[in-house]
Length: 231
Image 1 (tube, helix red, strand yellow):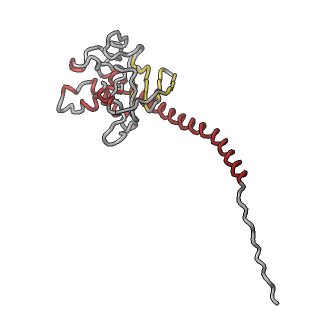
Image 2 (spheres, helix red, strand yellow):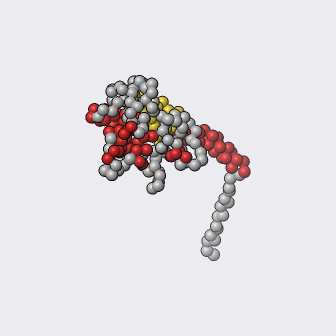
Image 3 (cartoon, one colour):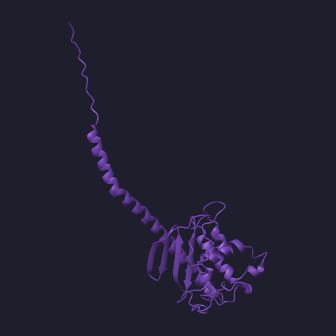
């Protein structure tokens, strides 16, 4: 007789209920430690990104202010005369490089050939600031913009909605004011950016001298276009 081949049947055993419960408990403990840490990393990364954007605004503002303070009669703050006598808040360097005027003038004062009265140093100053930042603050969509139209000098407690950014720039040693009244920078010609406050996506970054601070705020909800009438 030939050899009889015996097949060996291996018994496959699964995890017991106790083992599964133990694994789930271990995973839950790990998640309890790692998820908050990961969320902290995400928040920290966003905060650092907006600090970097605020620094870009600071650098762009200083470059623009240096150029226009050296080649025009523009002062640090506001001299209460305005562009063509129309806007009492338009003449200052600080106002011209802040997001409210930058966005407003980009939208409403583009064609200086058709409207030569718009070809002023103040409006060109805002256009220059926009050119410096437009590549770093890209459009949110084809029909939208990432720079808010809210004017933080008029409405300092307002916050940008959506993914939009807003900022105010102080040029000179004192605080800037929208109408020039009581503004210590109104006739000052230092051409020195002393403070930038930058807001985006629930983060407010303040750069003042060598100090950088960041804090979080509540993003407004509702119609995101409401801010575009709040000038």
